Image (cartoon, rainbow, N blue to C red; front, side, top):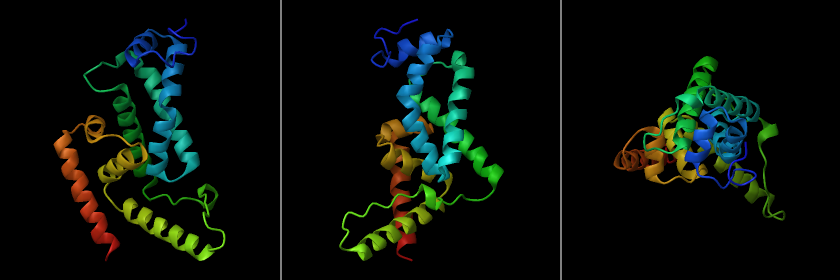
Length: 187
């Protein structure tokens, strides 16, 4: 079954969701194509490991496909439902591993914008790693907030929908998180 346009990428989520809930695999494929990059990025930044992120992203969409018929539009975007599935799987992953994952050297890509100043690139890399280490020490909900804000570039309202909070609560959490990061970076 075709979805309005031949690839379905231009159809609104509601149209595609309805067809996917009825068992249309092409419709679910269109949803997958629309959201896989965002969900992968979210999972990757929560796990710090490419292979685990790929595995967990696949599980997010497998779970979504199995339960798409149960999805109900409650005024929040479909992406919020996917992020909640991802959040739950990542939380279970952290609990099962009971330790923080480090980013392997194979997964780190250092871009040297100034080849004549390798020491500047090294300092920038060390500062980035120090910031990532501080972020990994934050509670999971604060990590989630930072990823949604700075990696996924979601608005406070969108983050609120994903996290099940009001926009005001997100602003407050964001402010407290930034203060906490500043204190930890300067101590």
